[in-house]
Image 1 (tube, rainbow, N blue to C red):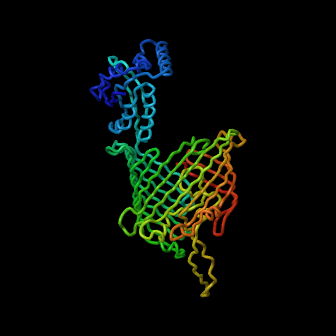
Image 2: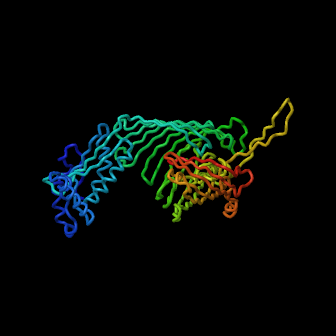
Image 3: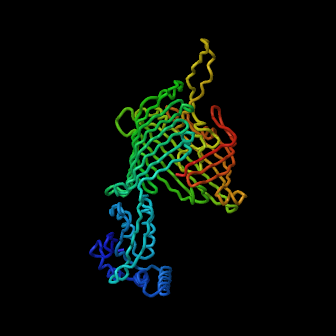
Length: 528
C-alpha cells in the first residue's frame, strides 16, 4: 500500500499529504489493474437499498473476495473507548499492521493481527475492529474503527493452591495485578507464595509493552526467596534478585539477572561438597531463550513439534564473589497422531550442560544451585524446559551424591554408634532425559466428554559430573549405560489451570543411593 494508515479522532483527518493522490498510483501500475478489482464503498457503507439489496451487495463482495484481490486503501483508523490508554501506544501496535495492507484480503488479515496485538496487552476487556466505507469523494477507501473497552476496576487478584515441582510440595500462592495505571499499558504486580516445605517467595514487578523507540516489552522484577533443601542436600537457600527483561517476542527472550544468594547449613550435617559452597555469592548473568512450539495443544498434544534452547552465561563483572559458568539447555518434542481411537505418540529428548569458566576452570566446581537436578512428580510432557523430569523418582532422587557429616548421638552420657547420616544430592553438570508417551481415549463417554484420558509412558534419564577435573574420566558409553528408567500407565485430568495425573509407575532401573519407588504417583503440572 502506498499510503499510511492514520489514527485520529476526526474521521476525515489524514496523516500524509500524499494520501489524496494515491488512487492515481494504482492506475499507473501496468498489469495489476486488469486482474484486481477496486473496492466500492457502497458495499460497506450504503444501507439505503433495503435488506435485499444489502444482502446482494454483500454476496457480490464475497464473490469478488473469493475470485481475486480487491484493491482498497485505508483512509483513516479511528480509535474509540480509550479514556485512559494513550493513543501513541495503540498507534504503535496497529499502524504497522494496517500500513502494509493494499487489498481487502490483506486488510482482513491485518484486522485480525491488530486485534491479537491489542488483546496481548492485557489492558482491555474487549477489542472490536470494524471496517467501514471511507468518504464518498474518495472511492476505494476504508475507515478502520477500533472500539475498545477498558476495565472499570484496574485492580485484579488471584489466590490458589498449586504444586511446585522444584520444591517438592504444595503451595498457596497469591497475585495482585494493577493494570494500565499511567495509560502506557503498564502492568504492576505483586506475588507471594508459601509452601508446606517452608519455602517462601515474594516478588514485585513492572511490565511495559513498549518503551520509547523499543518495540519489544520491557520487564523488571524484584524477588525475595527462601528455600529449604535440608532434606535433600543439607542447605537452605536465601536470595534477593533483580531481573530485567530486555527482549521478549513470541520466539525470543533475553533477560539480565543480578542475584545475591546465601547458602546456610543450620543442622551442621552437610557433606564436604556442600560445605565448600556455603556462604554468600553473587550472580550476574545474561540469559537468552529461543522457543518454537507448533504443537496443537500443550495439554494433550496430538500433532506438531516444539523446540526450546536456553543459553546462560554467569559472571558478568569484576567482583570475586561472582558465580562464573556457562549453561546450555535443549528440549525437543514431537507429537504424532496414530489414526485410531484418538491416540497420539509423544516423544521428547532434553539435554543440558554447565561448566565453569575463568582461570583454572578445569579444576573449579560449578555452582551448586545452578546444576541440574532430576526427579519429582512433574510431567515430562506438559512444559518445555530443563532435563529434570523422571516419573517414579523422588525430587533430587538420582545423580551424584556425597556422604553427610556423621554426628554421634549421646544418650545418658553414653555414646551410641553413629546412625547412618544419609547422602546429599549434589546435582549434575550434564543431564539427559528422554520419554515416549501414548495417549488414548477412555471407554466411558462421560470421561471423554470431560476431557479425561489415559496414557502409557516410558522415561529415562541420567546425570553426570564434569567439573573439578571429572571430565577427564567421563565416558559417553558409561554415561549411556547408567541411565535410570521407569514405565507406567495413568489417567490425566486436564483443567484450565493445571494438568493432573494419577500414574502407576514401575521402576525399571535404579542404582545405589537413588530414591525411587514403584507404585501410585500423583502429579500436578502448571500449564504456564
